[in-house]
Image 1 (cartoon, rainbow, N blue to C red):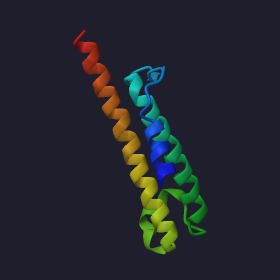
Image 2 (cartoon, rainbow, N blue to C red):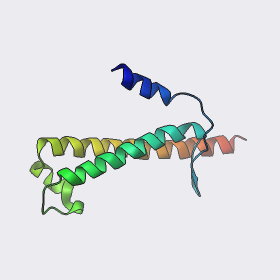
Image 3 (cartoon, rainbow, N blue to C red):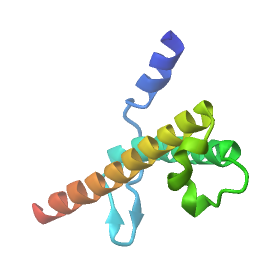
Image 4 (cartoon, one colour):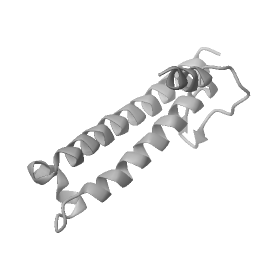
Length: 105
């Protein structure tokens, strides 16, 4: 447990980072660490979702066949959804914060 707390606290250490900037998608530099971690978590759980997906169900119809998943597959699919929503929330929050900071200068 203490190892997990130390890993989490290491994300909060101030570092020299660059703000994510992909044209109109910009964010403050302190959010890079959070967005990066959420991106990695999202990709890991996406890969696990594809691994636990029942055979014969296309990717674009997975939400219709949630009951066909194994219990572990349902858990992985739900965590993937939460991680993706968190990632998108952080990206949009970062865009709003960056634009608000630019407007006040």
